Each structure stands twice: as C-alpha cells, then as structure tokens.
Image 1 (cartoon, helix red, strand yellow):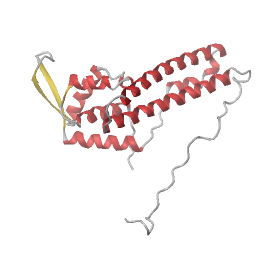
Image 2: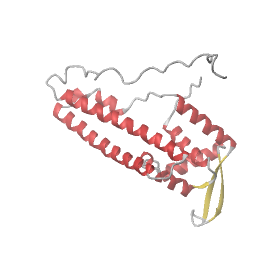
Image 3: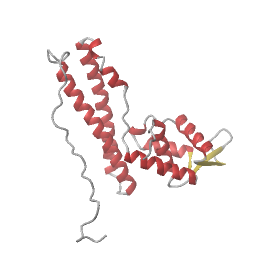
Image 4: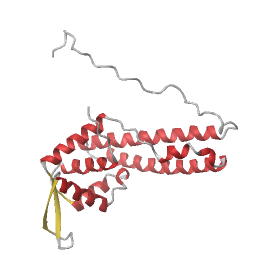
Length: 219
C-alpha cells in the first residue's frame, strides 16, 4: 500500500499532466484552459503554472521546446509536452488521489475550537460572513455545472461534471453545518453544551466484494 501523502502541489501537478495527455500545449493555452475550467481553478495563477511547468521540466516529467510566435521575451512561444516519466507520474497521482482520503486540518477548525474567546454575538456575525462567502462560491460552481450541461456530451465533460458535483457536495455540507452551529450558538446554552449530531450518518460501509464468483456466472 502506498504511504504517499497528498499535497496541494500534487493536485496542481495532476491537473497539468492531465491536460498534457491530449498532446503538447503552449503555456498560454494551458493557462487559458485552466481558467476556462471555472471557479475551482480560480487560484491557479499564471506564475504558479509556469513555476510548476519549470519544476516538472527539471524532473523530466515534461519536455519543452520553443517555436516562433508572439509570446515570450524573444518573440518565441514555449511548447510543453508529456514525457514517459510524466505519464507514469500522472498515473501514480491519479490512482493515489482516487483511492485515498487525506485528513487535512484546516485553519477554520482550529479557530472554531477557540470560539469561546470571542463574544457570542460577534461569533455569530463572523460565521454568517463565512456562510455568505460559501454561498457565493456555491452559486459560481453551480453556474459552472450548468454551463457543462449545455455542452455536447463527451467523456471529458462527464468527468468534469463528477468533479464539480463533488465540490458542490462539500460546499453544501459546509453550509448545512454552519446553519446547525449557528442555531446552536443562538440558544442560551449554546456556549456551554456540546453541539449534537443531527442523526446517524447518511452512508453505509461498502459491502465486501465476493471472494469468488457464483458457479452460475461465467468467469
């Protein structure tokens, strides 16, 4: 079993190597595609992209050559392509990300533990402000998903819709928690009693696959 720990850099690396699976791309075109992927890639700035491409080139995962054009300081455009090593790295990152769950402590969770150090009214106001920010992001991601549904069906768009729907599910869970927490904090005992769970979790443990096929089924 892999003991690799996923990092934010891994997510960006996976994204860029995945885009290069379709063939060589100019750096400018890569950034355009990332920006077109919508809200979820809003923090993938151009300097971040070129720094990552340089690192992948040094590692041998990407190769680069220049061609005449209008981009670049010398009137040249850099074209990036996947190497066999980059293809192997893509497959490794892809399989690891799909099969693991990395528990990451967030700054918000740390801050929530110190809510008693903030006046009750101000705490509710701050959580309300956070909720508005998440609502705005949720609306943007919904727009991205609506845009996808209006395009011709394809395997790539279907995969993107899965990723976008996953992001929406996380945002909706956050909104539901904030509503529950703020209702709790608004009660007289909200600062001194435990926040109760709403009920049993809406999931079940996956059933183990059979160790062998029934005799009536072909292998």
